[in-house]
Image 1 (tube, helix red, strand yellow):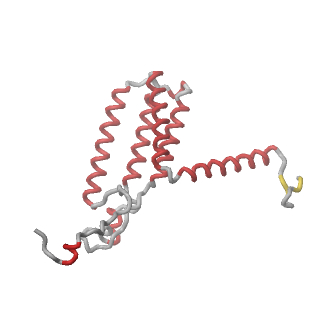
Image 2 (cartoon, one colour):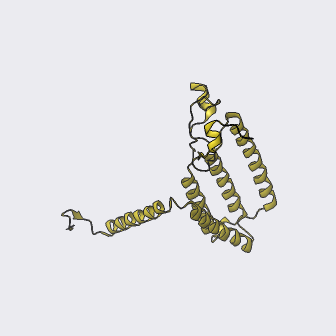
Image 3 (cartoon, helix red, strand yellow):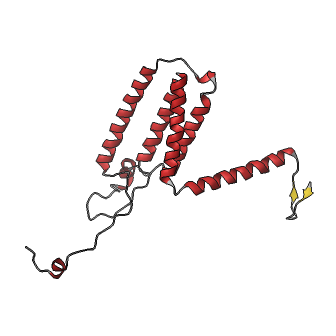
Length: 198
């Protein structure tokens, strides 16, 4: 073992070098991901490009439908996590009573997702990349009648979304926000002075 510039012993064995290289690459990758966090639209456009490349590859080689079906099921699972609150009101109601505000006088509690947007994006993008790599291995090209898989996925999607939407209606939550609500403080001088206008 040699002593490095910090005075600590450095492991120069092949395992130590590979470990340090993996750690450095992991740090650079994490730094890149952290830098992309505020660029929501650009991230999703990049994911759309990756998804389009995958769809084009599956279309051109006319195969790997079972991989696409598994990808669709995984994406449906991610979507449910993205649309669901972190604390399920149905379970919370059993312990504490109603927790989401149901009247205007109730305390406001912001919607917190079970699966945050960044993790949702990252998981979908990673899934498309893995599925794309799987299309290069013929072991994953299981011959199936794809219209049945598509029909089954559409039925599963419809039933799952119907259940999720009824859950949203029952517990009165909306999983989307469109930024901070802004109030327009401009009133005409006649209205602010209490003078009736015709």
